[in-house]
Structures are given as structure tokens and as C-alpha cells.
Image (tube, rainbow, N blue to C red):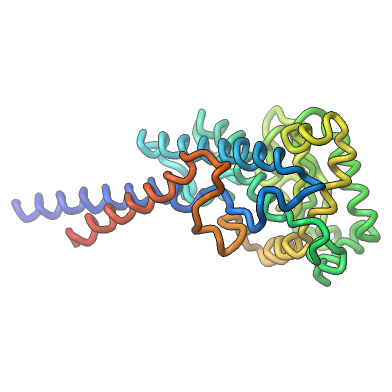
Length: 302
């Protein structure tokens, strides 16, 4: 009997260690992407002040709020249908998440995912990646098949972005449909096509498609420089779009792989920019420390 109790105690400790690993994995993996360019590198198309405000405040807040919500859910013993470390899986499973976490992940997690894609596919103006020649052959073929030309596609996406009422996003998505594998759609606020058609939300064409290119049309993305002139911002956006990254996104989507939003460059393990709040930099190291402690506890009893 004593031996059974001993094994039961060990099982509880192992389970607790595994739970700690899962709890902190969100902090270890869901993080603000490190920029592969300086905050002022997109000048004059996107100004330094906007980048500090957009990347350093808004995006950082979405990430931190997502981590806080997941930690609170884990600490409260909430069981989730997907791993807390997988942001793509979380936003794709909005309808399966318990309330009120589903609303938080929709708004904050959506904001974290959307901005990770956005900042990752920007690059300094004039760089080779901004040229149409940087578009991969498979993506170019898909664009031509669906829109007739790259110019037609960019014009259509700009038009869609210009028509978004209030805050939201315009997307170029991979649909997986053999007859039309690319589609343009829009979503309000921080909604994402991966969330599908949400109850009470405006109709989303090609709901469930995988975004490979996203244009942020919240005012925080352009108002400091352009004021209410969204068309001027859209014109600048195309001058800093990294077509090489968009091509990689397309390849991943075609292969059924999740877009890699964990980092923007090999610099991802470096300290975040000073413009980012201290909370986002401490969460990663704290998460890894907790993981190490949990692993040590696990190894000590098996």
C-alpha cells in the first residue's frame, strides 16, 4: 500500500511538472517577433515615430495581453483544445475556446498574429526584396492565374483595404481551392480569416483561408504620418513589402504548413528593442526558467 501511495505521489509530481511546462510554453514561444531591420529603416515610407508606436506599443500590448490571458486560464485549470504555445492553432480554434478566453484570444491573440505577419513581411524601401522580380515563380503563377497580373492583384487588394470601414485588415489568402487558390478578403478589428466565419461578424469571403499578406488599416498604422489619408499609406505600403517573405508564406500555405511567425530573423533570441515594454522581454526568460525548473522536477522523480 505504501508503495502504491509513493507511486501516486510521484505521478502527481510528474503531472504538476508537465503542467508547468505547458503553462510556460506560451511565454517561451508566443513572443513579439524581432525586427530584421531598424525601427527607422522603413523611412520615408513608414516613419520612425509610427514604428515605435505601432511595433513598440500596440503590437507589444497584444502579445503581453495574450500571454496574460493564457497564463490566467492555465492557472485556473482551464482545459484547452490546442496547445497554448501555438498561436495559429489558438486563433483557428476560437469557436472551441471557452468564454471569456475566446474573446480575449480573438482580440488580443488575433492582434498578436496579425502584427507578427505584418512586421515580418516588411523591409526597407529600395531593397531587392521589394521588387516584383523577388516574387517566386509559383506565387507569380498563382497571382497571374487568379488576377491576371501582379498589378491587378495589388490594385484589388488596395481597393479592398481602402473600403474597410473603421479599423481592420485586408488580406491576400491561400484558399486551397484548385480552381482559385488565392483570394482577397477583409476582416474587422483584429479578426483573422483563420478564425472562420464568426457569429455576429460581417461576412468574410473565403473564411478559413490562410493569410499570406496582410495590410493593417487601423489608424495606428498610418495616422501619425498620413492623417486620414489612407490611400497615401497604402501607396507607401507596397514600397516596403517583402515579396520574398510573401513568397515563403505562400509556399508554406501550399504545403499545409503553418506560417512561421515565431521569429522575423536569426536575431529573434536577442533582447527586444528598447521601444518594447519591459514586460515582453522578461516573460520569455521567466518562461524558460520555469520550464527548466519543471524539467528538473520531472527528471528527479522518474
